[in-house]
Amino acid sequence: MTIRIDGHNLTVEDIIKVCRDGEKVELTEGAKIDINRARDYVEDKLAKDAVIYGLTTGFGRFASVKISQEETAQLQKNLIMSHTCAMGNPYPKHYVRAAMLLRCNALASGYSGIRLSTVQTLIDMLNADIIPIVPEKGSVGSSGDLAPLSCIALGLIGRGKVEYKGKVVEAKEAFDDAGLVPVELAAKEGLALNNGTQMMTAVGVNVLYDAMQLLKTADIAAALTGEALHAIRKAYDPKVHAIRGQEGQITEAANMRDLLDGSENAKWLHETKVQDPYSQRCMPQIHGASRDAIAYVYDKVSREINAVTDNPLVFAVSDEVISGGNFHGQPMALAFDFLKIAISELANVSERRIERLVNSQLSEGLPAFLVKNGGLNSGYMIAQYAAASMVSENKVYDHPACVDSIPTSANQEDHVSMGTTSARTAALVLDNAQKVLGIELSAAAQAIWLRQEMGEHGIDNLAPATKAAYDFIRTISDPIEEDIIMEPELAKFDEVVKNNSIIEAVEKVIKLR
Image 1: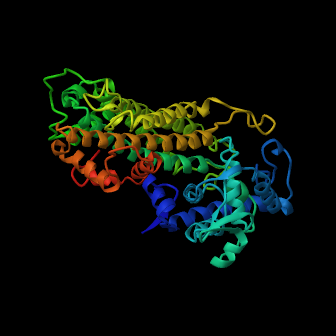
Image 2: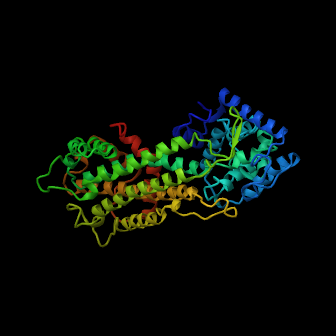
Image 3: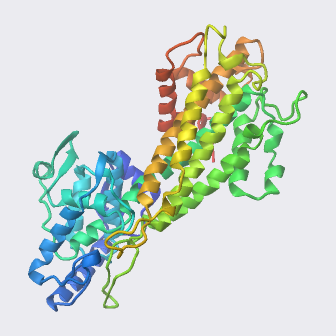
């Protein structure tokens, strides 16, 4: 299918289809009319020699410097070249694809004063998979993502490096091969291309989407651990959660009931114990709070992906060009800082469940570190260390970037959001959390196998949903009889979490919320 954009109806799921799956993009007819209306208005103002910020003036601290009509095109080109100050490793390609789509969608609203041909060329670049190389550091998140978006615009004008057909080449070379013509920027177009929150939102929307899947994986991991440690299902009784009224908690309890329904390991009640530790008993409350936080971020992101965030804004119908501040990334900065904390908590409680699996004083009779012949073999001892390391590292990344601000542009831009740092660190937190949950999946499956080996309730007594998860795990990993090189083993589980294949296996049996 083709994703049709008009500046108003793009969804998180649409973005993922374009940035990861390569779906094509096109403008709606209504968007073309809106873009042309705003551009006609800009051309009229230029003909009248009106003084308008960014069209006939300099930028930031240079807003008081008048630019002649003859110099307006050079002004826009200079803006892009001078602002390409991003540094560091390149963003992953799918992040840049998402940013290009988001920029096109914002321009499609018809408030930026850009030419239709310029927007179309950016769409043509995206559809031809000509993706500019964008270094990941250098944005303070206001006035938007100036440095990274300038790198995208640089490719649009045929300058700089791009990724094309699996290679990094000069932009002009890629354009020639694809039959495209680089853009010669006209008045207002540089600002329309590099003023906005699209880079931070592109990173954040990808993290958000994966976090939504990670919630399901976290529930599956907790359920497998519950099987291994003989959890008490009564703690997930809907009556308990209804009287608190927290939506995420209610949903999580329902997931746990469904995942463990029919288990003879995790019984509704146990004769030998009254309650489980918090990491198991309070799983709906912990995971549920993260679920609610992620839902909040989803709402904020869904608004931002259809927002107009450049400056100045062209209101052709009311005959106004307004210099505002929609480029300020604060709404996304707070949201992405919240997102990374929510993701971290999924890893935090997972590591605690891993500890209960490997610690023979806490594991309901399982052998120490989940291995036979302990002492000669260390089993999962250091797997828990690795989880602890990544959980600790996340606590560093969790420091909210949004509470910092360093004035820029000679104090004209005296409060900035640092939202791009919020999004980038959220991506780092996500990667760690995925790895920690992968370790829990591996350890829980090992523990269930050991129960069977010990002649206790184990594989044969799993619930249908957890049996589906366990059986899938055994298609990629065998039980560990004696010590092996662990890194390749744990890497398999990291990939299982990232590609959502364990979710697919479980959802053949039940539908997770």
